[in-house]
Length: 198
Image (cartoon, rainbow, N blue to C red; front, side, top):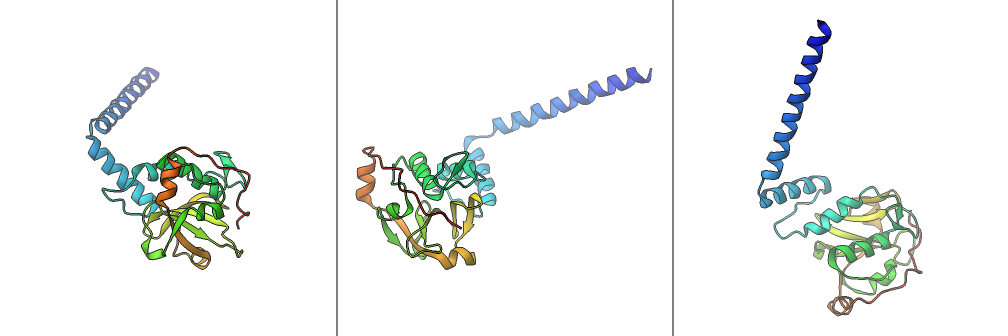
């Protein structure tokens, strides 16, 4: 008799659980697209420490979120491991549909230098880490935060962090002339990669 009561109780709890799951799923999918985008912006804002506005490029933030935690691999260009310039190149290709160069120094040759106080979402940030030459690049997200493939993997860091503040070189915004040229689909060599960063 106890086994039958237990089986009936178990059946009811499973049915109740499925009913709750269905109602939660329906509530989520019934939300208007604007409300869903608003929830996505709030979620990404909290994770990345950046206040996303109505004009924020959601494709940029989704891309970064999708890659967070990917391991660092010097010369790597895939989800199994990637370095800073390959991550930047991949982001610019996927988010902005631009095929930029492969090394951080070559990418710097394609930009207009921008002061730290003038950085905008999607701009590039360059560092000279233990080097006289540019050795690291990331993508500015806002609120002094940037996405990059660091030695700990793809992450979001702050320009206010003592380490990055010390090695920050310049910001950069892709030159209009390169944007026009790149939309034509030119390709670049991937032989020249960045120095291994710390």
